[in-house]
Image (cartoon, rainbow, N blue to C red):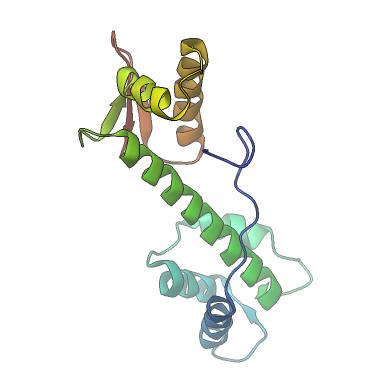
Length: 163
């Protein structure tokens, strides 16, 4: 229902041939001097072109630190792998948002524990309340670890917010 395995990331996603071609074209466009690699600044431009945002210093540092020290930048193969992983993460976050929206039947922007229980009673009526509560807690933790701004408010009913 939620994921291919409990608590696991979704299976590896593969780009369509047209999407793969687009990524290669962006790499070539950002490698203006035909060096065969992308510098730090080239990479930032490529991310803007593909994802619509400028990567933070932390993100750029993380990518550049993972590059083979024998090269001067990000090779095409490495770039394609980075972009594929970013796309996987984007799709994963979208899947979580879609599920959240389906559970948020009152369009409040958050789920109460009661909302969560009602949703599970429809899709898995024999699931115990204890398991539903644990799923609610685990989902809250998962969203936080994935960088989604989610918090569980401490209240009598409990709420799961997704913003």
